[in-house]
Amino acid sequence: MAQTTVTGTTVAEVMAELAALEDPKARAVNERHGDDHGVNLGKLRAVAKRLKTQQELSRQLWDTENTAARLLALLICRPKAFERNELDVMVRQARPPKVHDWLVNYVVKKSPHAQALRVAWCADPDPVVASAGWALTTERVAKKPEGLDLPGLLDIIEAEMKDAPVRLQWAMNHCLAQIGIEHAEHRARAIGIGERLEVLKDYPTPPNCTSPFAPIWIDEMVRRQHDT
Image 1 (cartoon, rainbow, N blue to C red):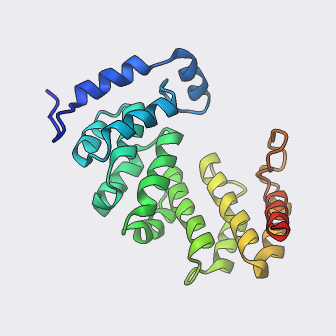
Image 2 (image 1 turned 60 degrees about the horizontal axis):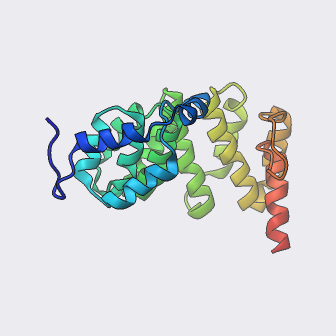
């Protein structure tokens, strides 16, 4: 039986509400991106807004292993309430891309354990876990680069990005672009690495969107900085 939270909302009640929001068309779209749920994210956020922050309910929803429930759990949790080992377990459980993305961006980045996890995860043999470490590194590159070895990061990217699994490759490519965008002294090298490796060079990019190919991405973002 589901436990009752302080507000009286049970896991069973929330799961029933999520089941009622299930849309086969939304599921078909999400599954093309590797996310096995059919709940519109706007409606999911509305549920989270109503529930407000509830750490215990969040933990219970996460334990259901249901993707929509885990997304909701990440919206109603208290990021700083998780211990380091909890976040490490969670990132290894977060296989659907959206769950992984929200866990890293909404929770881990706000955690006092973010730096320790960044270092540990970047060296992890699991490429999905390593991609989380690189996402945290990209955050540091942009917002708090002090203490980072940027030439060393470029060395790793140059040696490993070309043959990395897709999700890790995307994360490393984002870091490469961010180094080039934010740090003029490393821009030429970052662009050169992108040009040589040609990662995502032919990625189909919709009109009015910036290509994820690092040289184009860097040039476009630097141009925008100069235009403002």
